[in-house]
Length: 298
Ligand SMILES: *[C@@H]1O[C@H](CO)[C@@H](O)[C@H](O)[C@H]1NC(C)=O
Ligand SMILES: *[C@@H]1O[C@H](CO)[C@@H](O)[C@H](O)[C@H]1NC(C)=O
Image (cartoon, rainbow, N blue to C red; front, top):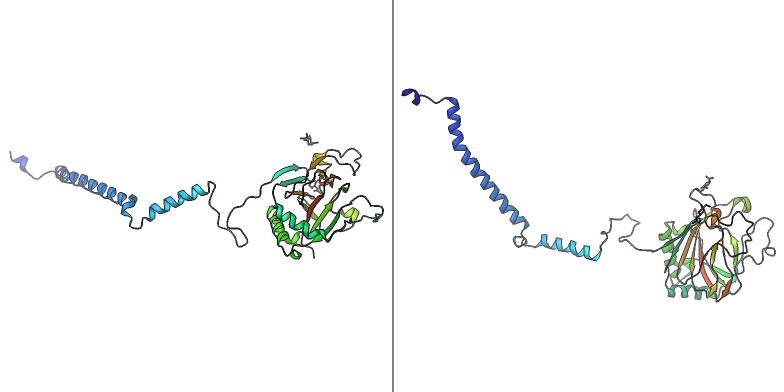
């Protein structure tokens, strides 16, 4: 029958062409799959990497992970530090905001500061309010002390401490007053007071004390605690005898630091920052005080 051998219909010819294409497409797929496999083996196989670089990077990362289970240091700004560091602290109170820094300084650093101050001690003085005189305020502050700035200390210890205080508070070094190094002998104390100056009592101030950092330079066998009688608002409603040693008491430990803020963040004086130094009962108390201002003294 002729009809069968006539020209193919368009549908038939397409089917015929596809019969050839199908195996070709399959073959192409296989070729690409094998090529892909080969390339991926090339990339991942360390033995194919002449420098072994890929492998090294991975093991370096692992080493880093082993050394520092935390994270790797961040890129830092021009005034920043290249690595993280640790200054342990304990929050002693939120009212007032007070932090304790165990082992802030070494025993050797404390010794150096005490030796430096010993020959320069004078009776400590008070900032006087209206109507107050050295005579009628006698007994409020009975320690001896001296002011030493970091630049006067050739050993460099006060500079190191000052820098660490600045790092712990993030308040620039320049805003700190010179260190007031104090010695309290048996019976000596500092009755409760504020470090900030209330303008209503002391007149207008060029700058204000924001915070105080106490570095204990000695242990004290008995007494000599730093006390916060109004801690968490306690004792404020009674007629508190400011000479009494009550409230939160912090026992001095050589090398440890105590930081508290005298001002709220809005700049007003925190009433609970009232504090004092209980009388030394046994032993001797040495402390380095740094008052930190809200701006650089001009
Ligand atoms: C702190 O003071 C507040 C307000 O007087 C009081 O409600 C709270 O119980 C005090 N906290 C402690 C732990 O005593
Ligand atoms: C300042 O802040 C303290 C604590 O948050 C608050 O008790 C006081 O009322 C504030 N004083 C002013 C004048 O805003």
